[in-house]
Image (cartoon, rainbow, N blue to C red; front, side, top):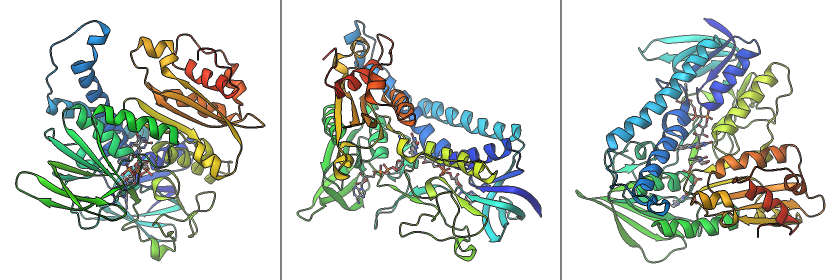
Length: 467
Ligand code: FAD
Ligand code: NAI
């Protein structure tokens, strides 16, 4: 049996980052991954391939419609979907190879196979050739991630009725795409296929898109989506999908009850959330408890209910985001080495990579109201930002929420160009306990999109200059 200080199960962003940090700190580390390539959901079928297709499809749409306003025109772009998919696959390959290189560089033993906990400090790995390999470990980290939630009675075939995985590899642009769930996956992948020519119709159970986001963001982005041509069926649920030879017949009905109606689709994307993935790990026998939502129960320091076994990432509570999993991986490796590893869950940013992008960090206005926290709010529109206008990308705004008496920044919400990059400044400010006044008095380059953040901070005190 091979013995290690640490064996990590799952080589997604939680697991591989934990393995690297532990190796940096001097532990002997093995990582077991049942996929052929490392990188988990994020690199293989999540963040990276979706962002490659979002980028490519955004450029395609821009080439088709966006240049006239800048004073030139081109002939209509011709889509080569196979080549676009090859671009995406190459981006994925580059990233997964990078992780393999990092394993070698950090002398991490990388094992391809499915791991199962077989006793205290013991694991069995089922290898591709059917053999098993036994491992011993002082510490075991479960970083097995999540899988798409299913709609009861609707069978996924990943060709016509797909999860995000199938939606990242369709072999032709569907004429009509029905997206079930107006969350992050639905709006990102719906955007990809709409830009490439699909009519996209969204069916969302709740009365709004993007639940959990700040109300002002939801309101403006709903308008933007409709303008882009998304058809939104809010407060509706899917009762069933019938497969015809030519198209799918999707039956939808009001979530609160009422008359059903039928809509036609070539492809249905089910994107109603993800569930923690804990199958085949031997958790019950090992004494690892799950909560009512199937997540591994941990204490504040990632320890499960079984001695020597820890868990991080999508498989535990908290937002299902790659950077959250990564930061937990680092914190846990440091804790295992006697350091004070820590994750600040108040400052985890969230980004939706649509056009324009949406980004937020900290509390929403609705959450502050619900918690009875008094606040001041400042908003600045990109229409009043010189750089955004020069980029012909002036949709959206920056909104800053700051404590009414201390002025400490409690939340920042952005709809607009490069919102996912702009939110970094807000995260740093919040980590340092900045006030809106601190942001307002920091010199921001001109002309830059980040000036909208400064102006929103000025507007918290109702003294924005350019509005
Ligand atoms: P995962 O990445 O899911 O990795 C877990 C790994 O464990 C998997 O590779 C799995 O094969 C392996 N495994 C499971 N069981 C075993 C076993 N018994 N033995 C060995 N290996 C096992 N997040 C963002 O922050 N930004 C984004 O832009 C973003 N885009 C996304 C787009 C899509 C379409 C999807 C589906 C998700 C996206 N996410 C995004 C979410 C992100 O992918 C996850 O939050 C992240 O991958 C979680 O990391 P993890 O390490 O916890 O798990
Ligand atoms: P989600 O939780 O973001 O959205 C799911 C949506 O489906 C919600 O609006 C919900 O109300 C709706 N819904 C649930 N049941 C329904 C039903 N029966 N009928 C109709 N609507 C229903 O989940 P999503 O989009 O599947 O993404 C999963 C996870 O992946 C998220 O937690 C997200 O954090 C992560 N992710 C992150 C990305 C990013 O950071 N850019 C990109 C893609 C995914």
